[in-house]
Length: 217
Length: 259
Ligand SMILES: Nc1ncnc2c1ncn2[C@@H]1O[C@H](COP(=O)(O)OP(=O)(O)OP(=O)(O)O)[C@@H](O)[C@H]1O
Ligand SMILES: [Mg+2]
Image 1 (cartoon, chains in turn red, yellow):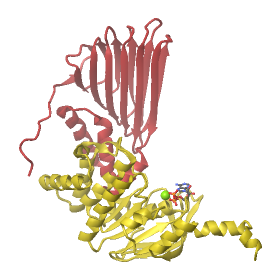
Image 2 (tube, helix red, strand yellow; image 1 turned 60 degrees about the vertical axis):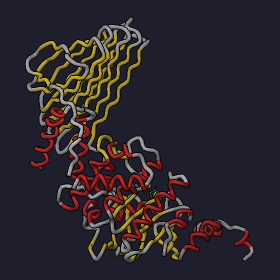
Image 3 (cartoon, protein in one colour; image 1 turned 180 degrees about the horizontal axis):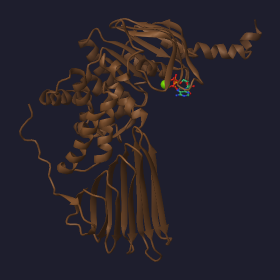
Image 4 (cartoon, chains in turn yellow, green; image 1 turned 90 degrees about the vertical axis):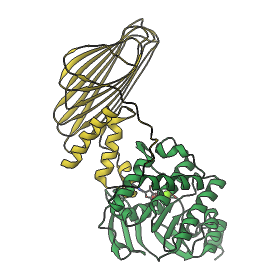
């Protein structure tokens, strides 16, 4: 049986996004779960990481990056209807950084990611990266609208976007190990939505959701 | 054990016929090797055996222990005990080796995996493959070198205990020492599991000196054109493929003119 000296993973508090408001981040690493549609403002003044899970809500998120702001955002969502997730990044100070990873799973109708990255003139040496993937299963579809408004030469800005089903080759690989397509899909989606999050409560919420989906299928 | 009879296979879109009337029978405990030039359909044959979605079988049969394989899904074939190491194994972000293996084992037995036993066995195999222990918790093949990927696939082989092993260019990406270690591990496995059969695809007889085949087949234009023993492999290595000589003859070589 399991040896008793198993390392207990640190559990942080998962905050709920409830009312429309301006949010100041309490930690270097912050976990949020959306519980309703809404508009939220974040101000980032130091190096901070945000994990945000949205289960079938449309969110309008704005991040102002100031001072020594260096944001890494892992946004994951699941949608079963027409949903739009809007994420706007404003670099308000020189040498600020934003790295945005948006992973969406679209189950029914259309999931849209609208992403804005803005670097105004004279805000030098900023880094503004966006990386988005929407996987669709069943009848779901997806669209990614990336927009970079860069009015300054001295900036590194990138975006990559992919909309499509899970990779056939990945499923086939897991199939060759004797794992059914259903379970393979579950494993791949779990890693897609949880990513490198280390928070057990946060991860459990996503796992539970996928577990329910699996049982329903 | 594995019986392939008059298989014809096309790509899913039907545009390209790759396997043409290929037959091959492999008995319990036998080791077979297939050699052939690039693009003749060797990897396609292995994928067709596994039921890869990019290919359709238009006629012919494949049975495994008397059971029709073509009507089964890939995972069902794997659970019958067929283990396939691809020419270029996939890398899967976020799914760890340990998670994949425990899921695969659970799918086979229907019971939860005994963790203590699992870790013990993993560690033994990792040691005998001279791998780094940390890789248990790493994503499957993510950031692995070509050789590390192949070792990782052999590690999984030893954990999943197949009855039939399908190796597509196991030797590619492995340096001389790693190839020896990997082949030693496979030979040890075969010694303990005498009924296990092997079909390996290769371009070089080097691996055939390490895992000794009972039969060597030469493949050309989607079918097997010649069967022999290890001397056929040596011959191919020395003189090139029969088909290439044939091509030269067709193009009107000196040999042709003298006749
Ligand atoms: N999905 C596919 N769609 C179109 N053509 C394909 C597909 N798969 C294979 N082919 C073609 O079929 C032929 C056989 O390919 P295959 O990969 O089986 O060759 P191989 O014998 O394994 O070659 P190598 O020694 O280079 O690995 C090639 O010409 C290849 O381009
Ligand atoms: Mg090949």
